[in-house]
Image 1 (cartoon, rainbow, N blue to C red):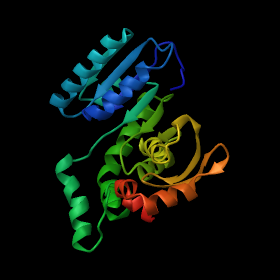
Image 2 (cartoon, rainbow, N blue to C red):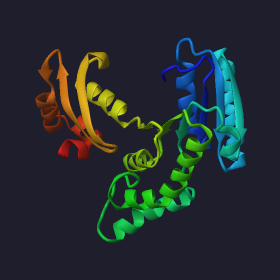
Image 3 (cartoon, rainbow, N blue to C red):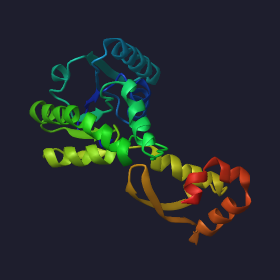
Image 4 (tube, rainbow, N blue to C red):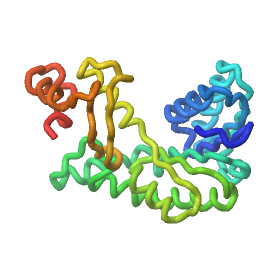
Length: 242
């Protein structure tokens, strides 16, 4: 996070997604010199919001820093003064996610992950888009200098929709590229900080266009591992086949 003021305000919409909230708060608190600010947590589920607030307060306490924690079920109460808005909403709850898989499966489309691309991703985009664009509009109205960061899938579709609807900067984030690059380094028995790589594409459908160690292309080794090491192959068969 680029430091834009001595005490930035980070508003997290969908903070009831406790895993994402915890990870983001932990990352922010780990930034050197960023010793104070405000986490404003928003979720329409008051019970989950209270859990997220308790987690945030505990993380701040453990960090020894002087961040404040606010929480509200109404984002309009906390958006003013916000510099960073982090979105991690799940519209209509998890009960609807099953349909994103089951309906395509009925027609022969078997999705490994149905929240980003393919018919499942389209379903989720149509379900999530209106609520997401309302959040973007409220941010533009109440926090006109904010940067918007989106973690909700389908990340690419929602980020594009937001970028087309606002003049505010919008960034889409996901852990998949970092996680996959570490996984590849592990397969190749290469220290992660020595692996040189470039990645391009859209979320959950990206390609490593460069995979080198000390200037040597590692794709031949990776293919050899997939062909001759069943233990490695079985950990990631779809990626190796593609």
